[in-house]
Length: 274
Image (cartoon, rainbow, N blue to C red):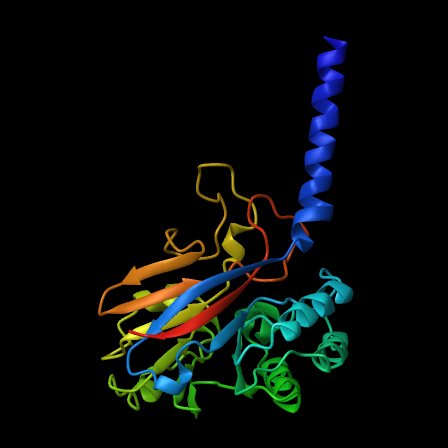
């Protein structure tokens, strides 16, 4: 009995150390095809890296973030898209952290775009001054930060939306510019937004984050905690009505330093013609 209890205790300790010290920093680079209707031929085969949920702040090690940036930069993607939650706001100190870390941000050879997440709006997602400062810092670092805006880069049009929980989410005015014959790609932090009747005639891909994949997932079971209404939206690829598809990244950072069976992720997409 004593040996069994000792073995169980050692196993529990090892598992706890793994979920705390190992997996939260065990970044996985994943590789997917991203078929886009109307993609110009000279963009076929180009690479887009999605970086989501950095959560720069008191809970995520700066050195880990810098290592992630350097790994992306070594692979020289053509586009880099940031899908929100740049910081976990606790005090204005996060602005200094963000500015310092973004001095080593990886840029796409053709373009770098981004959006905000709910945590970029500070406490209760209502601090507009925090969101404005995060936006300014990202733009100073060379990011085309889109807040219900659109930008065309090298023949690929990016639609970027403010966060759903910020009450500044207003995709309709942006999607009025949508032309299904163009090569389009939408950035939307919170996956729940895809279930709203706001997408009009938009067809194509939506890149999202927010869920962290649940951070902890029992084998063969769904994660017990997800910050979304639609509990199907964990991570990975989803087929949606209206000829839309969504990819949810598991993200880079964390709110609590714990991950199990849900490694942090930076997806690399190879653009193809649909």
